[in-house]
Amino acid sequence: MKSIIDDAKLLIFDLDGTLYEDTDHFDYYCRLLQKRVTDEKKQAFWDTYESMKKGTHPVAIGKVYDIKNDASVTVDPMTLQVTKVTSFDGIEWSEDRVKAEFSGELVYDFERLIAIGDGWWLPYATAMHFGLKQADTWECYNATKEYMVTDQFQLSKTPGLKQALYRLKDKKKVVLLTNSEIEDVKRLLHELELNGLFHALYTESEKPLKTKGKLKTILNEYGVQPHEAVSIGDNFINEIAPALLMGLKAVYIQPNSIEVDHENLHIVPTLANAL
Image 1 (spheres, one colour):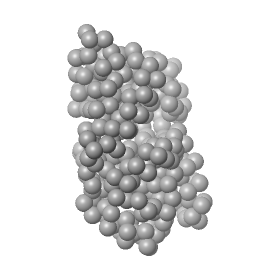
Image 2 (cartoon, rainbow, N blue to C red):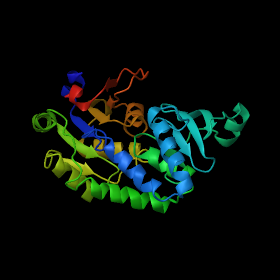
Image 3 (tube, rainbow, N blue to C red):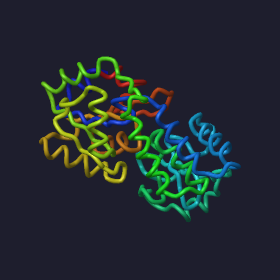
């Protein structure tokens, strides 16, 4: 495992779920959203979210949530072809309906087709199903981010991460590529005691929609060939598949058993196992 990182000239880290692996804040986010539905829907709201977390619901991490059709879309992340669609209640679409609705490569966006790559998006999909507005999710998301930098919330530091980044920074370029806004990134890095350990911070990156473009920009800025770079993250759709398709190597942080086989891919249960 260490050779894939040791041999690289450029390491591109994700932030949420990568540099810290806590998940309690997802529940906090969901509780804020739950308060915005009517009392008779509150229990169903939470039960739906819990089933998503357990992977027993059609909408789950690794799927795409189709807001327009209130459906779970299964996509091959390496080809971007839709292979299956299931209604929110678990009814599978016919093959003809799938072909009629989704022809060619799927294009992710932040309006209709939402890549459920990590735990942030499960409360969001639950909220959309139960009739909340995107403004509700944005307000609750911002409130959660604010909560995460208070004394009430403590981030768990990955063992050995700070020391490893110090060592790696002296030998290669180490950058951060995240969808988070710059002020949130600075606060989180301060909380994790990782300030000053990255050569550059690329924020508000709009992954997965713009992942490939961002990766190309970073490679060009540092004069590095794709095979000399490693993308490190917990979100297969956002960070891993686009990198592999471009010829980069990748480290996928995934604590659960998963069947993905690629010569340039290494899967670890925690970032501590990769450094």
